[in-house]
Amino acid sequence: MKKAETRRAAIVEKLADHVLEHGLESASLRPLAKAAGTSDRMLLYYFDDKSAIVTATLQQIAARMMGEMSRRSAPAPESCEKLLVRLEAMLDEEIFWPYMRLWLEIAARAARGDGFYRNLGEALGRGFLEWGKMQLDSKSEQQRKAEAAYLLQTIEGMLFLKAIGLDDVNAVALGPDSPRKAR
Amino acid sequence: MKKAETRRAAIVEKLADHVLEHGLESASLRPLAKAAGTSDRMLLYYFDDKSAIVTATLQQIAARMMGEMSRRSAPAPESCEKLLVRLEAMLDEEIFWPYMRLWLEIAARAARGDGFYRNLGEALGRGFLEWGKMQLDSKSEQQRKAEAAYLLQTIEGMLFLKAIGLDDVNAVALGPDSPRKAR
DNA sequence: CTATACACGTAGCGCTTGCTACATTATTGT
DNA sequence: ACAATAATGTAGCAAGCGCTACGTGTATAG
Image (tube, rainbow over all chains, first blue to last red; front, side, top):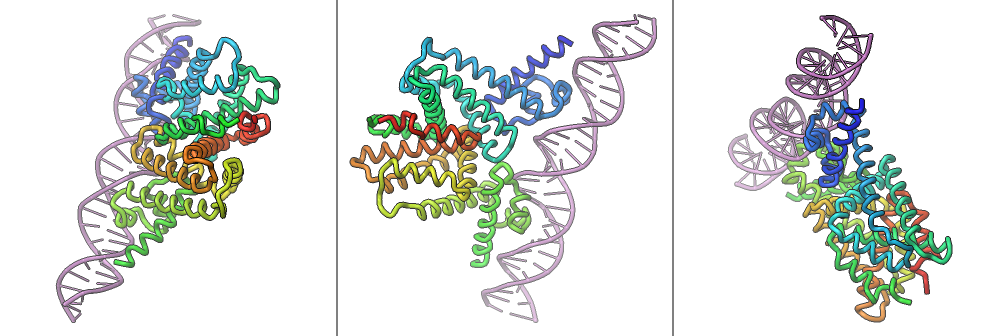
């Protein structure tokens, strides 16, 4: 009873580690089971089917990510530019990269029309918007919304370019000659 | 001799259709062969192995995409803002969506460290930068570079948000209250 | 002490994956 | 016409996929 839940939770922890390291593509039952120190048979004993396993694992990962994010919240709201600088720095922290490349995988599956990943992606995206709004010291609610949206769009663009090895382009796009800085 | 090349080219056309519609994930030999009206056996007769098939197919797709892009080049260079509007419109053309979601898949694989997709992604990204530079009427070379980078980063951000169903957020991020528009 | 529910191993099913061995038919160049 | 070569069909392999049937040991409740 209680033991089952404990064991289940321990398994999910290890599954989260594995998925963060190897992605969804290699998330098939036997490798997952091995990573969790059990068998495919037992994974399907603790969970209904594979999709339940993936759901629980991604929930765990989302929780971890949320923890990392809130640990990096500013003590007080700040300006959009300053927040962007902090987000930029986060993207370069190696701790975030596993989450980020997984995030890309989720987006790719959502783009293919998979409803599960589409809903998940939308929820996580809107979650970020809420987090962003709380960090911002915008003048109006309209502006708060617009700035949060701007930040989300921008860091996703940065994520994408980083993924394909164009970090230098990111630097230029945020540099002094960019329209972002032109005022 | 010539017949072989012709047949090969015809096959690649159909493979490109299939990959554009169903993505790389479902690009396994037997489905591909079926889409091309042949057998897995014959695919491996015309190509060395699966990776050669994928390479040829993606080359064909890149060529098609390039055609669509150049067909939409402005007659004369234009400002960064105007070009962004045109790119925004392209992203909403249904004809581009198959390319865009495939583009996301490539980025996701590149982020996972797959060298093949990393190189491909970087090459395509830099190709876009060149295209963008040619469309821009920037004042200096520095600015041309920065604006092209800005455009690439921005449309990738838009692509990402569109993928997870946040088109509304895109609209807000480009709207009047966004820092992008702040004088 | 025994009956029952839980926990887990072993083995396998039917299917798909990339790829190959072998044989056969078409199409050539001479 | 014939020999060589190109093109294609049939079958199958070993591995991996999600999932299940069936057994067995073990803990616990009556």
